[in-house]
Amino acid sequence: MTRLVIPNRQARHLWLWTNGLSVPGTGAPDVMALIRQIGFLQIDTIRNVTRAHHHILWTRNPNYRERMLWPLLGRDRLLFEHFTHDASLIPMETLPMWQRQFRRLGSKVAAADWYRSGLGQSEIKAIRARIEAEGPLSTHAFDTKAASREMWARPPHKKALDQMWYAGDLATCHRENFVKFYDLGERVFPAHLRHSPPDTDQVDWLCDTALDRLSIGSVGEVQRFWAAMDAREARDWHARRNLIPVEIIGADGRRNAAWATPDIEARLAALPTPTSRLRILNPFDPAIRDRSRLERLFGFEYRNEMFVPANQRRWGYYVYPLLEGDRFVGRMELKADRAKNWMRVTGFWPEPEVKWPAARRDKLDRELVRFARLAGVESIEWQITHPT
Image (cartoon, rainbow, N blue to C red; front, side):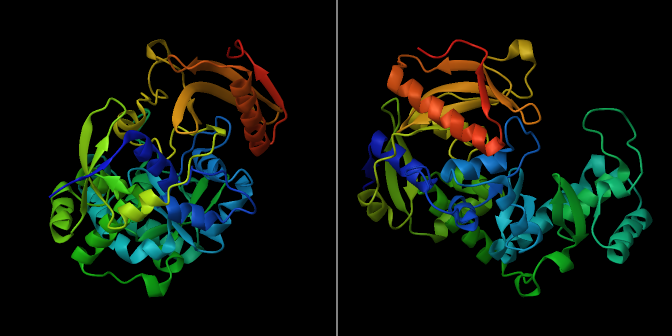
């Protein structure tokens, strides 16, 4: 079968459009529409300037503010929280197709050594009974202690809460200052969405929606999008579908075989030229989450070094890629102190052969002002030399 060849620049434009980065958002943000477009929203505890989930939404519409997200989970029940490749907020309408993930992760955690060394079944039932009787509780409502002081050690009650949460027996009711409150799944998940379609239907739906949010990708990339199935299940899905074969020209000129959505030619024909605005992307942004894909399409090498010892880092602790148009022009490290009203540039690394004339520096300065506004700070300080 003849494969549709997609030139590198067109592939870049397609990827940016697919991720909602082709045009700067304007007007009042439709937060649910933004999350539905990217499939799910990864959440993260680190607040270097703002937490990743807020930054990802703000990048797509700079009118977004932090107060806009959590009511969609706790008040409106339009989102639920669970685990894809990491902790994520997922549109509630996905719930019937997520039943297999509750079963997969619930049983996997229950069989894990770290879990089996925790509480007995009677204590687990007692924890659930407390939540049933008292309503939503956070982990702070329990007082069992971890068996060791190791960084990743969990106290027994946290192990029990985790297993019931992974299995969908408990659900995140809401968060307060990012602290998770657990309630019974039956009190959080709408009754009309708690049914479980046939497993093959769930796999097909998850793979179809993954490819829709990738536009083009390998079977492995489709599998990894939701991280809710194994490789065999993804291959079986592929065998049931008549997908469009394509070849993507990489940044290095090599051709990479992939598969595309049935409407790929219409998508390519309607592609807008990406905005020339310079954007500061979050390390967890879905557009750069797959580092291999990022390097293949854009020739941009990026690694997250948060957990790398400081003396072994190539760049820095929390480093933001800088996207201008359809190419990455550098990366920078930022820190903010909201109480002291400042944001500081603590590291800057331009891409090789990318010059920084006054116009590009001005773009970066304007984006820093917008980013500082999201964090509610005014002072922007450069602790290093401004790019030249």
